[in-house]
Length: 213
View 1 (tube, rainbow, N blue to C red):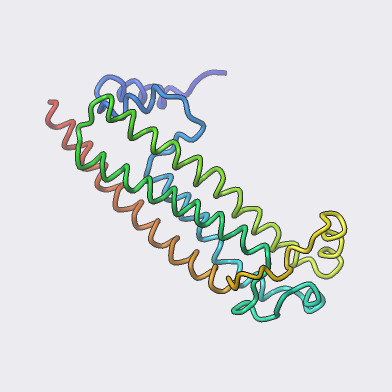
View 2: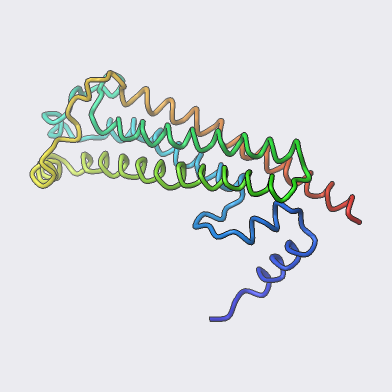
């Protein structure tokens, strides 16, 4: 399979004239190679998925009501929502680490090789926590909510197979409405953080290359 010449040229240019951080980033092996702004945008999208839990719950057929803790999503706190909370907290943790790493990178630029490795260690951990574990937890939450849209038969079949009702009361008082609102707010904040650092990092890259000329 032939490689993309444009991508190869970009990597070569980065290795030869880019910052130490960029060179080290391309040299390291990682399953998540997105830039910090791109990663924050993806995390914002995952957090935004929590916001759709509210309308999904409201669209459950009446026949599903027997499996629910309450019909009103503003007060209903099913067990499955705790999985979404877990995923949302991991996304928030990952985003916080990425913002801190980006702020450190911009403030101390240009980084030494040791500093670049330290920043990338934090970024890699944040991506695995956020995009990996947190993203999977949120996707599973949305899938479990989607089962309820299938009606009584679908929910009953799932319970018979899994041996547990995902919509049973959680006992923690975290309602679907509260989690959806928190997910929406967090999604907006993370999106703007990603946009802000996209500009800051681009300006810093231009400034750094200008000083090298």
